[in-house]
Image 1 (cartoon, rainbow, N blue to C red):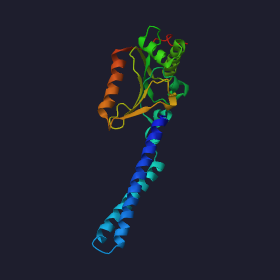
Image 2 (image 1 turned 30 degrees about the vertical axis):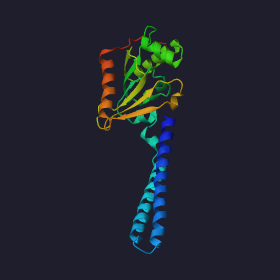
Image 3 (image 1 turned 135 degrees about the vertical axis):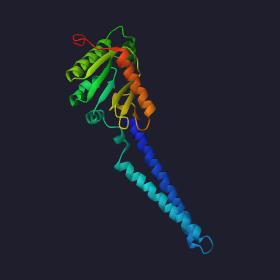
Image 4 (image 1 turned 180 degrees about the vertical axis):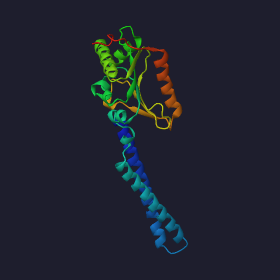
Length: 233
């Protein structure tokens, strides 16, 4: 999970709650002395006190909501997301995490785009350089993912298009429910802490459609189906 992102949003929520609560207390503090004074300011004092109580209550509600429903629930774990989706398309560099975590077992992953495991693949060479990994190791990870996907009836195609981001499309054919997780390849950050972007079709349809169209373009015209024997380790 994108732990740093989640922690930052939680802190922002708590800060917002504290600010609103503090303003509410300040209003109450201003209003009470006015009420205690005799004169024309009596009504104004009650306005401050009532407004302050409302603001303080809102601050408390935001704080409680932050505890009861943390932001983390909006970006489910990869396992839960794949398990609960009806259809999943993945455009991953190697897909080794999917294979190692046995996520093909859920049967929801239907299409997989992987980099072609060839030393002549410039896109793969770039990924190897960025990840600072051994070419042979990366190629074996791609072959292992390919074999695992095919064994679980998923369709697999190999391509030579470099993409900095790994994307997972959940329920691509459900415009109101589909969503995409986007993760940037950054070897300087542990994989579980790399920032994840969430794109929901019902909130950012154009962006959702853009990622989906890119996937389909590579799938339909810029990739090939691996031949049995090519993905044997």
